[in-house]
Image (cartoon, rainbow, N blue to C red):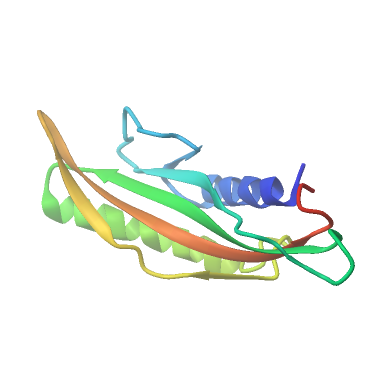
Length: 143
C-alpha cells in the first residue's frame, strides 16, 4: 500500500474506532445520513512533491485531505449540538494521534466553515468540510 493510502486508511480506522458517526471513503453524495452522523474521507490533494537533490528518491508531501461531516436533525438546537459533538470527536482523534502512529511528520487543521441545507420533506442537514494537512515522506512519488 502506498504511503498516501496508508495515511487515508489510518484516518478511516481511527474515526471508525473513536467516533459515533458512520465513516465512509470517497462517497460523493450520501443518500442517507445516520442519526449518529456521517464522516466522509476524500483522498484530497497531495500537491507537488519536494525532492531531495539527485532525483525522485525521498519525495516530501504536504497533503490536504478533505473530511466532510454531515448531521441531519429536525430541531436546530439538536442538530447544532450533535454536529459540535461530532467535531469534538474528530478533534480528539486528531489530537491523540498527531503523527498517525508514525505515518506523518506533522498535521495541521482549522475549524471548518459550516452550512445548513434544507431538505424537501426531511430534516435539515448541517455540513462542513474539514481540511487536514499532513506532511510526510515517501520513497518515491508513487510509493
